[in-house]
Image (cartoon, rainbow, N blue to C red):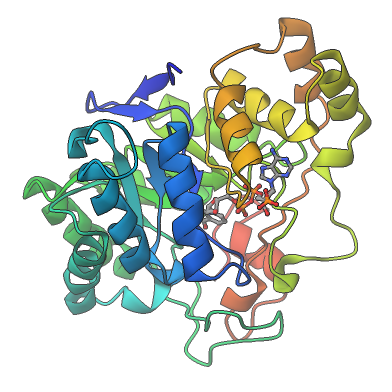
Length: 334
Ligand SMILES: NC(=O)c1ccc[n+]([C@@H]2O[C@H](COP(=O)([O-])OP(=O)(O)OC[C@H]3O[C@@H](n4cnc5c(N)ncnc54)[C@H](OP(=O)(O)O)[C@@H]3O)[C@@H](O)[C@H]2O)c1
């Protein structure tokens, strides 16, 4: 199966679909290893990792199996993979950044990363598996000066050839408006929540204008996300009548329509699954049977501005609610 790819501003080829590795606090590391094995056997070469997912060591074991030729007929060379990792919020201090990067590199068994992302633009920690009311007493709003100290370390990692692309995740246009003019090396990739009920068109347009490749997380609307990320007003992409209709026309599952939709909008979806059948059909969804222009137009109209990963647990003292994290009034809330 020929998996399409996009080319970044630095001329690196990134597979147009990736495999997520966040087990939403309920998939064991052993189960994650098996899922990544299935994904690599199916043909995924882009793996979306993060130190906070707590499974980079296990994923490193699977990558080694793949590069040693234990998963497929031939050895898979390192260059065929696109491996992303992310800096977690409790490692934003200047002296912690390189150490955390090197730990991810070591755990994954690699000597360079394809992409390193700032997972969230706040140094606000929450323990894995916590509930929605969890708050860190040290939590802070976005502080630009601190962010740029962090970014300088990212720039050094890139200049030293330890990572091919550096990027951001969970940022807003007001934050990017401050960040971009102060960069020596601008972020070339942005990872953002994106599914038909949360389309983020304005942020996507902004990213394209600024030469960033877009990765869309929770592309299926994260049906098994942790309880801390669920509220009674959340809508369900996989039950949307337009998605269901188009799925029927393609004789396929609604999940695959969400992935085709991301692909048609030049976004790289990174779905996660534990099931071989889903892992394979998700990959195929961007390789064959594309949406028609009319279907794409219909799907582009079902946005409900329904953010699922709201980030309650990153709130600082004095913040009103999760909307404060997302600068919805057009300025940075601090
Ligand atoms: N940068 C960030 O802050 C951030 C935040 C969230 C997520 N992410 C990344 O994005 C990845 C994906 O997001 P996500 O895991 O939240 O959600 P998702 O990919 O939208 O949804 C995953 C869920 O959908 C189910 N599923 C997958 N394929 C399916 C199919 N073909 N048919 C029916 N159900 C299907 C899976 O269940 P089964 O196992 O039963 O198939 C799984 O529980 C994460 O793993 C992580 O790598 C990044």
